[in-house]
Amino acid sequence: MVEPSLVLCSIESAARVYPDRPVVFFMKGLDDIVNEDDEKKARERFPTLSSYKNIYFFPLRLKTVFADTPFLSWYEKIDQALEIYWTHNKADACRLALIWKYGGIYMDTDVISIRPIPEDNFLAAEDAKYTNNAAFGLSPYHTLSWAFMENFVQNYRGNVWAHQGPRLFTRVVNKYCGVLKFTSVDHLKCANVSYFHPQRFYPIQYASWGKYFEVWKDLPTFNNSYGLHLWNYMNKGRKFMTVDSNTLVEHLYQQYCPSTYSSILKTVTSHH
Image (cartoon, rainbow, N blue to C red; front, side):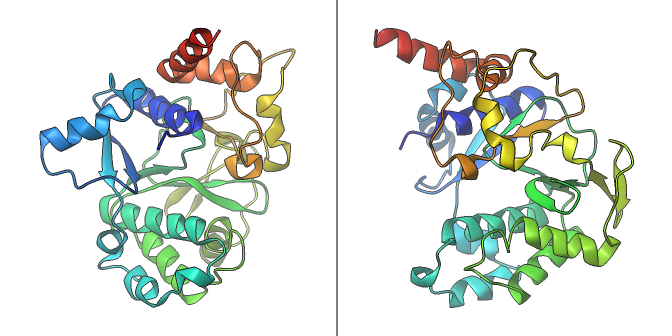
């Protein structure tokens, strides 16, 4: 299975922004990784990322991830055949269980990292009303992680898009902190964590996701952003980064994931 270039760009950009931290990518279909040889084999599947020594690949084993969390009994009861958003709901659960157990920063693979996030514990607003779960950071065994997991299971509605994702985060934030209002791009505090302004990850809002694939007369600086969420769910594979298109996304690849970009460039030139 070849990973989409945006996934590779997302992982590479994180590895570049956090050179002294492990960047871990969990994926299905990987064999167990027990020794260095297994690790080497996993790395060989992603040649563009092989020069980054801080990237690690792990197999995603749901029962292991969900053990000792509210998710295990939920997962064992669920009838996956009836679930219309199973991939997304499962992904929403995995990130919470992993951050509960190990702590750190979680980011979706359609987030391009552009500078280090200065906080360990943070949630990020998507707009004035919603908190998004595409990027957040919490230390291990954080009470908020547990609150998210409990609320997820208690209010589970698998057939409602985003109910277990951004809407879950929004429900919990509203419960703990009420509706937070920004007066500047500075972050607010909620339940002892930093609550980031939408500019930090969502400077281009989801209804405008196509702007990433347009040519801009003046390129935005994104000076207030730590990462850029490219709204891949909205895109649904319609638009890609293309070489020599001069689009915003091409400039982002060139700057933040140069290995991914040069491998696409090579493929394009070898086909001509």
